[in-house]
Length: 223
Ligand SMILES: O=C(CO)COP(=O)(O)O
Image 1 (cartoon, rainbow, N blue to C red):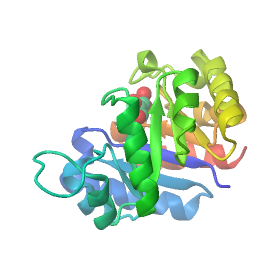
Image 2 (image 1 turned 45 degrees about the vertical axis):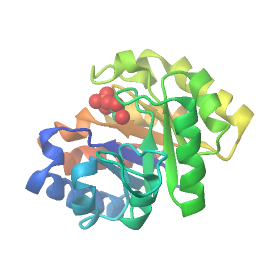
Image 3 (image 1 turned 90 degrees about the vertical axis):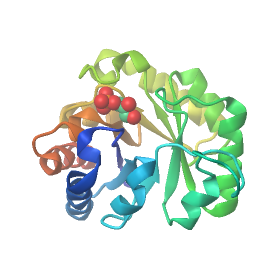
């Protein structure tokens, strides 16, 4: 199975408008050039525009609601109707209850959508794995956005998380995230047992997002 480079575009300026579409083109180039799956986790407001440029797109959040009279929410089925590959849920910057996560995973499974369930700790990752999402992203919140890579500063979080998830379900892949900025950081995460990485600022604040994504992807592909 190919390593995974997931880019959480968050709400950085470079996620929107022409810059966002340019970054989507960059992601397509990297997916062609490196033997790595590249997933863009796009903001709800422009995810369809991003997916119109590059197809492997998740949205950053979804709600366990049926289609209908709900204002300002995103039913899981809406993501399926828009043709996205999946949904990310429970990011530390948008936490949900376990019942919300469970309902989203169940509805997504019915609709053929992948789920990237986020977790702050190995224990939370194991609990998420019980729901059988496609992937769990393990990100210690205190390292997010710091440039201090989890794979260097807290490698035991990755190894404990990979073990905890495998003890629940070997079919659930673990992505490592938080502070990852270089190919070396990403390579280390895969060497520690992660299937890939979930990154944000290293790409979204890069002068050249293409070069940064290629650096991260090629480093993981070499492991
Ligand atoms: O929150 C993250 C990805 O979802 C990690 O953020 P940084 O890559 O900016 O540390």
